[in-house]
Length: 594
Image (tube, rainbow, N blue to C red):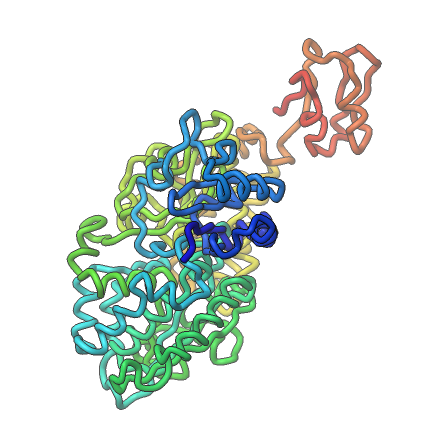
């Protein structure tokens, strides 16, 4: 029996910050102090507060240490674990406040963790710890107490909608695929091909609680009459892949995957398939085509996958977060889940919050929570006293939400009404220094690169859109280009084959809708209001502020700055590379952009 447990984040974020080194040093220090049999080290999944990583939580008192460095480990062991004295300098403290219990911090107290309930709590490589938190109890209940139709009705009644982007009712999808049970080969697929820039919701669930996905897929298999499941996961997620493989092996050994699960006569197994980084394979038909061993390209619908999907058989596909809700719905009931959220968007939603925000990380909040709550209360606001400008939801398929809509309750329908979409849950925050034309160009460049090329509207249309945006950021656009862009956007939306192409124009349309003045400034005034687009920038020196220290001239990579010692310097605009090195080095604020 251990008297203390040290939980160290083993998610990708903290691992990249050196948490593996911390674990090794902890093991050494515990042994050195004779504590190896009294203190257990648990490598968990993501705790959520990625901006403060590597993070460490010590139980039973739930002491939360942040930004832990290797040199801190001896003090943590000798002071906290040996003498019971908290190392106060390492405690997580919110801006301007005092150290609080983890659950009382603004970051955590406003969240409601359902899909993430075990992340940062259990060792994801231990099936016993998952079972200890109620794991596989839902599967046992389903197989021994419920009929397949009961399961589907429960999911329908819960109001759970797909968390992968489209928001289609999960129970409805399962119902469509449930006919002819036992007479037709069927498949259950999991979309873990998370490709949105800045998104890491699914990765964190797989790294922190892989068994929840396996359990939910088995429940789905029972509901529709499928015996085989596939998880399509990005090869760029090595930690998630490793933990999924461990979880599948453990579940098979415990008889929770394979033949005759719980002596019910139900057979179900799961295999992994690794994606090669194609964003289009997040689209359901392209994903299934890829699992089949073919080039990942979308197929026309109908027929829909519930009728003719993987290997031309009835198939359901849900994403990781959708599955992560299933066991809790079974255990707690449809009414419990439906009591959270809004009228048409039930439950909670996980967001990967990043960009210009203090508390970068993973949050799970009830549907209907406002953007302001997520950014200002949970996210800790914008760094350096800057003003909030916009938030991009839904990745390349979504749109930009301006400050005027910060108080709109976030759910599927509200986001669509203001020109954005939920997407899988990426939320990129932008401040006053962000150029919205450049943002639209960034997402279009991504889409152009990721288009599979199968249909002309997407293959050619997105390329033409990108070219027009590029012209505008170089000061070469015309006001007529804005009308052409809008016309092309709607053509692509109406004619592209799959969801990738149909939603690709959203960043352009939303920025044109809310930030048209920035487009006009680029075109008419030949200025980038945010000072981002290099072709429209010029760096200048304020002669009244310049002290003639020569620091800017010495750091200019192209010799564009000249002037005598202790006299005002000047920048030769014909030589200036617009790299910003001079402005960065100036200690007197004498260099400015215009």
